[in-house]
Length: 362
Image (cartoon, one colour):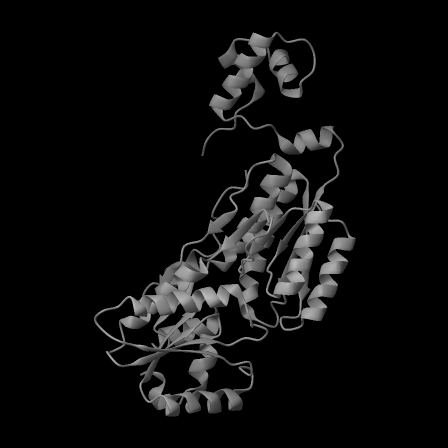
């Protein structure tokens, strides 16, 4: 670990007194232009960053407040991971005068989501971390935060063409390409595959369209085999009887339907709907390291999982806002995370390393 650079280190390297360095740092007192330039140059070369917490206390600055707005993790286990990542980062930045507040919205209720957004903005946060699942309501938040001068970071779902500070998550198009490549290993010429979204409120969702396009483009680029591609949205995934009837209907209608790409964390819902005798024959690629998916990965009923690094999305969301608010650092507008390919042989490695803080806060 690099040793923290102190004012006296700057003074020693520059050949001036500690008091002179302090006057340059705080822009007070009389310092000749050439000495000031020399001190600033050494600060930059040594990578000096001031003690932000001490400076904030000295200036009697109020704490920065970061609002985190996520789907309710008690409804969908996927959202436990970004919540935990954000909590880890929140604890780290609290030492620098940043306070993080969490707000959770019902997963399939856009009106409740909008109401929570309005309530959050009424508290005048200094920064906002959101998962913009509902497009129109999220656009309202983006416009309002822009008007109020509040920086925001998006995770999981990207809305392009906004002034968001950063998007952190997967490249949706490339995840579709990757899913196609993985399914291709188990498909023969003339087989069919389906891009399946087990979700609600998805019309026009750009991230879903990007996944579908990436998947289709991969198979269109193959010269060695022709695969029939289908797309479907099924909203009643929480009803086992309806889910089972729908799955059987698809397989009857397309006897050569041999592969599914489930575009979110609910691949296990599809497996549970399949008859036991064929569940192991259908090739399924899904997302995310949640318990029911991992259990079916171990039994080879899910062939591949693509890890979206949900924990790091939450962690880096707080990390980015804190660096912007406290250190005034520039944040990359897009922070694409690796698309890790998980099979039963390497799943335990990713689980054992899931809670390691990936980056220092400052």
